[in-house]
Image (tube, rainbow, N blue to C red; front, side, top):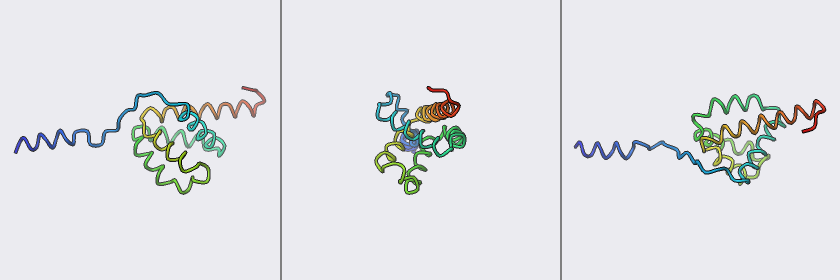
Length: 119
């Protein structure tokens, strides 16, 4: 009986673990994050998006699944393939921090442009 319990415990020890995906982001992935950041800034949702992403960072995989649920609403702004790819990118733990950086950079560029400064 104890062997069975040990086997079950070892089998389910990492049942909900998400691989960290330490490989670097491709140029295509970075371009897609930039496009999404531009969309967020264009809709004047940078601050709420950053707040939401910061709160969701420990549960990045769950957040990507919420994105798949919201796909019909956002489908008019991204192609289906782009949106699904963005959800896959955001499953990676380090991607949330990178996405927040991209949103903040895009917002800063927009503010500088509106202030008459060129970047």
